[in-house]
Length: 242
Image (cartoon, rainbow, N blue to C red; front, side, top):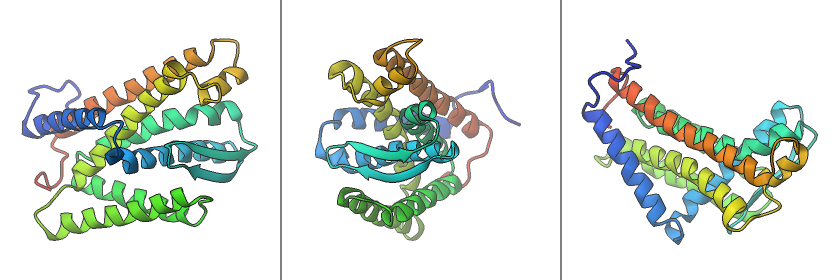
């Protein structure tokens, strides 16, 4: 039975989940401006741009190219589709993928599925990538995930779930920090939120939309923590030592 009220919280797995999440968040924020996080940031940028592409396809548009740049920038060129639906999909999509990966990390089976889906997505994009940064990212991260998978299955170094959690938290935090950077600290007039404000000027400006998206992203992060605790309190975890 699902324990929505989180009665008798917190058991050992829930404490590990909360502690690991906090440690990951602190490490990410502490190393935010270092080169050590660059590969994970580029994967986050890839998921951001992929979300634009998915939104374009869902609204019957055509994706012409996806680019990820070494300076942590990215670009998705689309034709057709519903522009006001495509624009917010980057930030909100990153938040959604972050939540999905965090929840996947609570269970070894779903962590395997998440790692496999991410590797497949990178493999597919490898053949349509238009720049070498994205191609290198795809190749490098596929190899990285393969190594983590082998270590998980053949050795006592069982960190697949924690890697998936780290990527998930990275996506959640990157979305909020990127919105802050684009719209407040350096005010990029070419940001998704500024473009969205031009499409929907009746409500608020780019900063206003950025704040709305940031709050939604933070909500996704909080929701992932709550649902993660619910999953771990309901006896749904498979292979807890994995």
